Image (cartoon, one colour):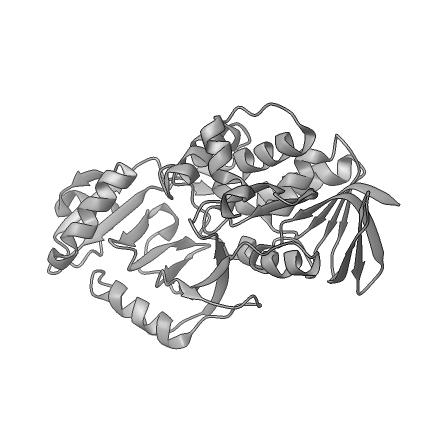
Length: 357
């Protein structure tokens, strides 16, 4: 069978676009792992921060808000940002960039009672910083694919890609697939897939980010605490199923692989966290890492390749994949189906793959 849309990559990018396209043609999604959402998508901070990212990413965030709200993907959390005297410049830069409300340390203690008041001198708060139900978003798009007779092929690794005049042939370790339009949504592997397809690579960089899961910092219900952040992206922490997540917020360039946390980087991040929070950490329950893959200008890449109108880039989600998914997948679908987008021409151009040629 020749599919209309052959998608490589089962993260939130490929799955959301598959969901958008499934009612307009035959969809087949190829995922190398045992299940969709295994890599970066399964290791998300699961927050929706509307003003997070560069100007183009923020446009996608804002265009996604209503979809997230209408589908019940958001729940109250809040974001508290802490800073020491030496972090003052970073703090006020983030206050302006994210539109945060500056509050007193005493006010912040009502929200997060274990702030180290000896070191923390500046605090800001964003009330509208909800949790994002990433699993539900992913599964809802996957369900839409299947309800429209689309196929999701897990445990299927691409080994070779051939271009014919009217279609693509993709060989895998299981079987061979054909598709009229090939969609590259392979996350950290997007440049590798492009190279296999004899398409010029666009220079994406996978960046590792690690997370540690530790016991709750308070005796009471941890689920009501806000996400807490060290100004300047020095660390973040948030509740997770009765426990507490801490990330050092590192961006370490990596080759595409199944990422794992670096113990030293985690220890350094936890140390920075402990300087600002009265929380003695005696053991780590578990840890993990994900690869957040960025384009050269840190905006997503959405569009047909300049030199091949049958090769579509849907890549560079970075740390914004879930929160931008509704608007990004809608734009990708509109471009593929030649429908008019609700986004401005300027935003569409800024996301185009052609900007790197």
